[in-house]
Length: 115
Image (cartoon, rainbow, N blue to C red; front, side, top):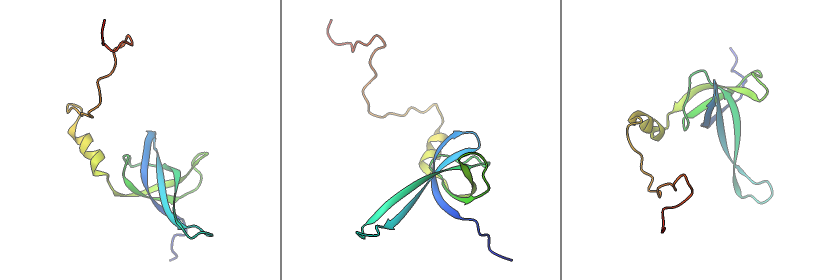
């Protein structure tokens, strides 16, 4: 029995707006060949996702045959869920989230100052 030769990468889901497709960012840390400084690189992949992972999830992806023009990776498994995202979703829409921002201007473009 031989090992599976397909490449595998670990990344973070950063986009879920498409059907059965997620965008995964894979971060790498490399040393610059000339200067020796440690440089952080990232690359985005379109990944086929049947399981329905959420934004912020840590996932393992594996290369596959081309599924579409830009999609050549399949989600193999979800390694960890992003707790912050799932806690907000579990709280439901009835809870009010305050951001500390100023209230929006009126629709007529006036701010409500003097007359």
